[in-house]
Amino acid sequence: MFTGIVTDVGRVVAIERGGDTTFTIETDYDPATIDVGASIAHSGVCLTVVGRSGQRYAIQASAETLSKTTLGTWQVGTEVNLERSLRLGDELGGHLVFGHVDTVARVADRTPEGDSVRFVFEAPIRLAPYFAP
Image 1: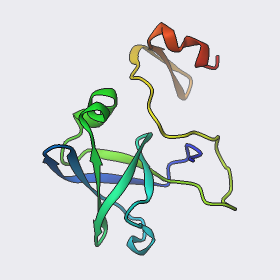
Image 2: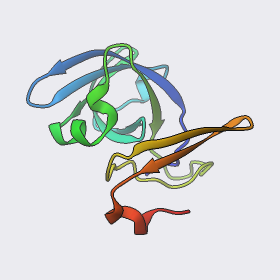
Image 3: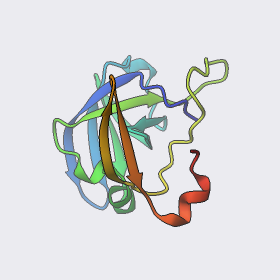
């Protein structure tokens, strides 16, 4: 389970395409705390660590994940928002999110508002009942 609070910005340093696509991510996380099998959210997509070496670890994504998320556009050098999964006793400083992607929305409009930007997204109508206003 995740809160949506980004705790590091990693970088894609290698991509291997095969049956699944393996991404190698460089991070400032303490490597001793990254277990093989751990779940880490990568720009909102929960993926499992399949290996690690030094300040880098590897994740794999299936063709379905590549087609339903932004991972299919990642290249060497892409920056990735990282979030570790919650542990019992961790502060819930954001909101609970599961890190599983149900669809990809299209940015329909982007309008500056003060120091912020208002985005309007278009998503499949079948998911409308699940969106909060």
